[in-house]
Length: 270
Image 1 (tube, rainbow, N blue to C red):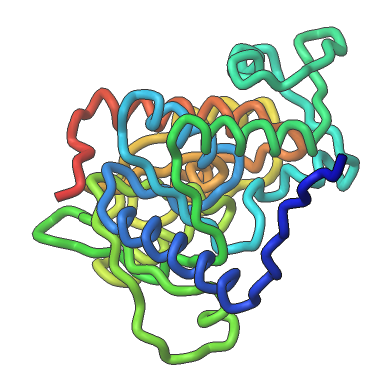
Image 2 (image 1 turned 180 degrees about the vertical axis):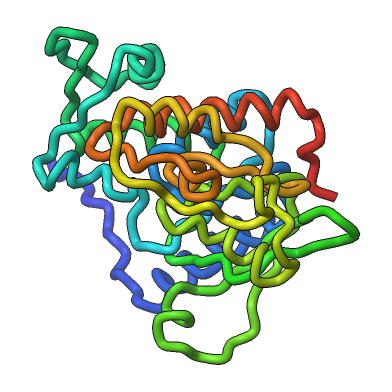
């Protein structure tokens, strides 16, 4: 008895390219208007996106590098293990990250599992992530930021003069780490008007994990109408100490900024 063999279609290079272009273009175009635009795909940004999406917000996250996760891929001191404190353990549990207790309130995770799990959870919750894209400016209408101005990261690296893309959003989260890139753009474009003592960035202070981890959560919040800061960028803006090789504060900050935006009730892109 002869078994009928289904003939497999030959792979067509042009068809493959067309699928990629059409799918990406459709998705990207749909995301040019959102409730919340998160700039930076580190742990704080992904956690914030997860909780916002779970609350029904339309969330888009832009990451300038090829991969999300920030420095968490390398764990602490390039050893792929991440240390978390007791306060952040419930977030690890909610995401399904396996954590081993090491006594005195410390927990350790595998950095690769941690990043990949945070990312997968955020995407499954509804966060749209676009990598290789940088924010080079903000949209300001009146006294409020109403969106971001984007460009391909390769454009900035090559220093090309290429017109950017505009994306409207109800709120913008600066989760760009130590550099606090959105905060710097605001100061450069509109002056010293941040919600700090001087109106400008106060700068990150020397490393002190105990204080830095507390301050990163305390400093999480709105720095200009429509713009919030989370993660390491929070301490850079408000002058908190560097936290060093511990990651719990970034998870707590991500959840905190999501709660503030949800509670504020004004995160509808129009």
